Amino acid sequence: MTHFSPADSQSTIMAMLIGRTNSLKDRILDQQLVPYCVTSAQFKVLIIAAQFGADTPAELCRHLSLDSGSMTRMLDRLEQKQLITRTRSAADRRQVQLELTAEGRAITDRLPQIGADAMNELLGVLDEEEVASLERILTKVLVNANDHITITRLSFKDTGAT
Image 1 (cartoon, rainbow, N blue to C red):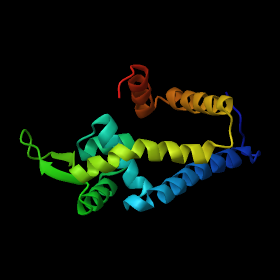
Image 2 (image 1 turned 90 degrees about the vertical axis):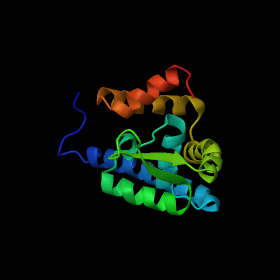
Image 3 (image 1 turned 180 degrees about the vertical axis):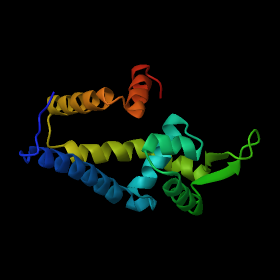
Image 4 (image 1 turned 30 degrees about the vertical axis):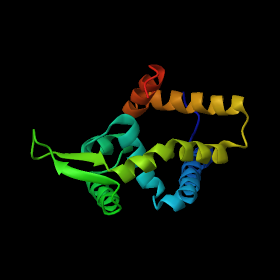
């Protein structure tokens, strides 16, 4: 279905709104994460490692749509903060295995609440029906685009797995 045309500025407005909403979400997360000395980008790596068991840089890159260079720099910072460790796989020395440290696990235990608080701040202006509609619309767009991560996370959610 075609909704936009080059002669219509609506496509630019829609793209801006989607991008600005994502930026606002990250700024809210950054503010809430200050006491933990973790950024919103680091939050995403930690929560994916904790909740989905991603334990290699390649897996994290797939989940977060990051290139390997960006991921290496992110993991360097998390390792410097002593939130993760990296070791060579015993089965394949070319592969790096990631593991949360005790301090990393202590922080990841708090991340779901921090994430919920950030989303409540971001979407608090919406009522429950509007939030449900927004989730349905975004899910429809991403599933239609065959977004593997969305599909994987939805099946994870549907099974009740945690």
